[in-house]
Length: 110
Length: 115
Picture 1 (tube, each protein chain N blue to C red):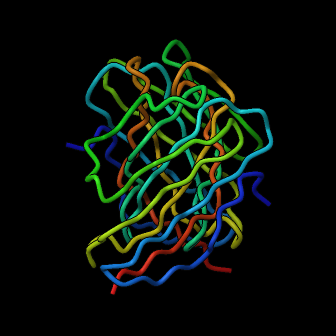
Picture 2: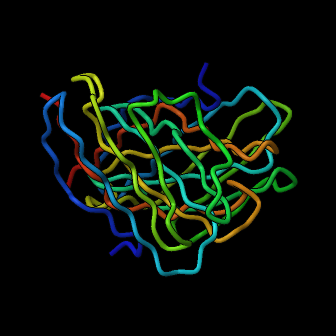
């Protein structure tokens, strides 16, 4: 089964609004990463949060991690049309494997 | 622009063909990966090379044969593929020797169509 599962599967918002995506995972992790993928392109690393961290910021991105609930969230503030993409979480275990969640497709309308 | 270069960008092949996908990085990364991604699905790990040695094979069928000639190059040899193997094949590299503990740098992928 998927290590990372995300919701919502699809999210449509207006430019300027905030977007929140959630990710859940099943086993213990070393870290959790978020990636962005534009249609038909490669993935771009956004942010990594380690298992002993609870929150991390990078520009307009805010990631939280709750290891007790085995969940993480990605918040994009003040969204832009250029943020339209698919967003994947990747749960990274101590065994050295990263397993990607199903992804959230974000559409930001101008 | 990504620093992981994949060629070709698109490949169409028949089920009896032999072809190869190539990946190159010059960032000094010592871990390299092949992922397969079907439409509207997440990437699925196929192979991991660490210090040019195969360290993870996710039970991939033998019609996919990886090769790591040196620390900068990663190939995926394809033979007798099936139409269901059509997908986007993504190469990635990582700067850390400890597998998958760091950021993955992805190429733009090779879109494979098997007829």
